[in-house]
Length: 232
Length: 82
View 1 (tube, one colour):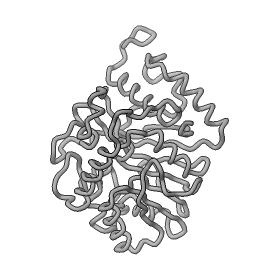
View 2: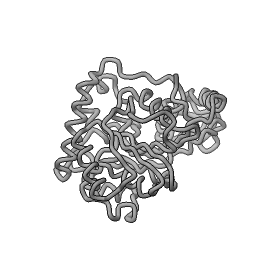
View 3: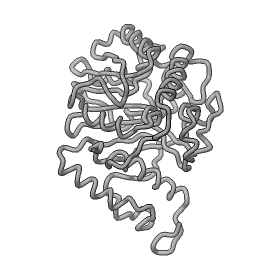
View 4: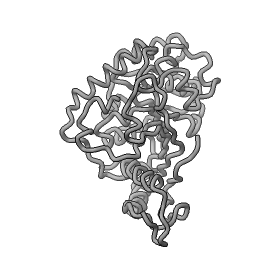
């Protein structure tokens, strides 16, 4: 694609810009559409089955990395993981690092959307300290059980896990200073609804710190209807 | 109704799927792990200003050479190393 001065821009740059603008449009504007013919019930069931397996059998081997190797790859510091229960670390399946964007401050309130086995919530709980609070929300019961066991083992009194959906968070309006999430938005057909919920629970000027995925190639319309491509 | 966030920025991206135990469609779509941040607007006026700056960027055709994008003041810094 030529630039106005006639020079060619690298194709990867152009594609990156397109996808970046897509994400920005989702974040800032009201133009995002959901996938109208996708069977949301089937999709949620497939996601729950996939992540229940990760909670119950984290070493099985998946189409994504998990556990300690993944945490190292994503730049999680050793001191963040120190003292945290192995169950939460082994079933960790994020795609980014919400804390790479900025550490949380003592006393802050945090919501972890799609908290999974609870690793990011427990790290957040360490960062915000006893005067802060963390609420993790997840729809997969096996993940919630793993996360609650880890809270008990870690003795973390400032974090709790609630069953719920990203599109209808069980959290009051303007409660949070920070919303974190890791590898979850890409699983939601209605991203605008989830982002609106994140905005609802955040205080004005509250921060969004998200790990997720970005695709450089266009995803064909028929591929968006394939449940196995959403989960794999 | 929109999400109401401003100061969107992708701060990091990397291939986080290659070498996973099972094959996936990630490579087929050029999938990258990313970190991004944004901030809930302090008030309606700030959010409307952010939307206006987005309207400047929506056309896909670049308006300036790489690194000199006149419309990139919403925090879009391009690909970064971890």
